[in-house]
Amino acid sequence: MAPTETALATRTPVQSKLDPAQTLRATTALLDKIHSDLAARKSTSTTATAAEKLQSLLADTDEAEDAEDEIPIWLVLTTKKHIVDQKRLKPGKVLLPHPYLSTTQESEGGGLRICLITADPQRKYKDLIEHPSFPAELKKRITRVLGIEKVKARYKSFESRRQLLGEYDVFLADDRVITSLPHLLGKVFYRSGSKRPIPVDLQGKRQSVDEQGTKRRKLSEGGTKAVKWEVKPLDVAREVERAVHSALVHLAPSSTTAVKVGKAGMEAGEVGENVVAVVEGLVGKWVPGGWRGVRSVHVKGPETAALPVWMAGELWGDEGEVLEEAAPVKEKGKKRKRGALGEGLAEGAAIEVPGPDGKMRTLEVPGKEPKSVEDVEVVAKSSKKRKSDVPADESTAVKDTEKAEKKARKAALAKQKEEAKKAASTITVTAETATVNGDGKKVAKKARVTAADLI
Image 1 (cartoon, one colour):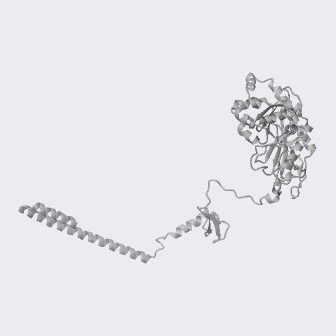
Image 2 (cartoon, one colour; image 1 turned 90 degrees about the horizontal axis):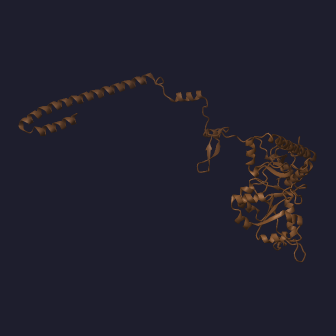
Image 3 (cartoon, rainbow, N blue to C red; image 1 turned 135 degrees about the horizontal axis):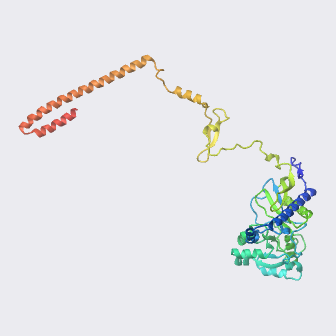
């Protein structure tokens, strides 16, 4: 197992370092696994069908399998907190004791090909590289110098960017323009981290002393603004060498950071020393809290499991960050009832709840309500008045009164009908007499109206 840290409970800085023996065991096992997988893949490729061979020929060159010596080895550092709050387009650098890129080693393709992207004017940096004092071996590797304006004008299409990506092995960029390159070069360069531009400082160093030889004071202390020396060919060569021999650190708002520390063609001891150097650089410069903020360190290949190198004994760095009780889990899809607000409080206690206008309102805890079904039924039955609960004498008197009123209404209605019949017979006799006299229409009409009023 990986060594663990046992002093995290104390609040003193932990000066723990990686165990070289454990690091060597992890890198050795990882390289053995990668080599064995490659050997098995080669043996099975001889028995592949014609369709599989055709598919491999049509595969994308960017996504093709790496050569045995070019398979990357990754360091995976897991922290207890996010390293940064937002993604940074300008990567950091950690110098490697055994760099996986070399500016002096020759290869089948003619050695390392470097493209340098500079701020305008680009002629200034071309002249620096062509200067006699510039190292001749490094001069052969820098095969092209591009100004930022030429990048904007020439590489707008996807095909041109793809062609530029395939022509060079390493891209270096002036740190003054490197944050503009993701927009100018697009996903062709930034989809993977293999050929992302590496930042270099192509400006002269700041003058630490003035013309009289005295130390320059800060601007806040009444001094003058800092002035930089004119950049020299050796300064550019030194920056290029340092960038090629460093590991790139791409920081993002995450607790996991992966850094390329070597290739499968390197020795296990060299990869192990690179792992130690990168971890020390990450912990000392970017990890909040130093070693107290590190959770684990692993190494892995593109298609292998992560092998542990170091693991912390605690999952937190400060005891004050640990919650004693977990926060209550809210049920989705269910609304909280008003009665649930006062659970666990005494009757009549005051609580604050947010109102519809966003302001807090003070409410009193309502009294306890019956919770069981039997109690609810008893309350509902008691609220209704039964007939059996009314006294017998009172019910008899009410019934007699209702009967008397009903009998009186019937008698009045019968009397009204009788009077209407008598009036109708009188009108008929009068109508017949009026007809004989020649004035029957007018009288009959008047009689019908009178009869209707009576009814």
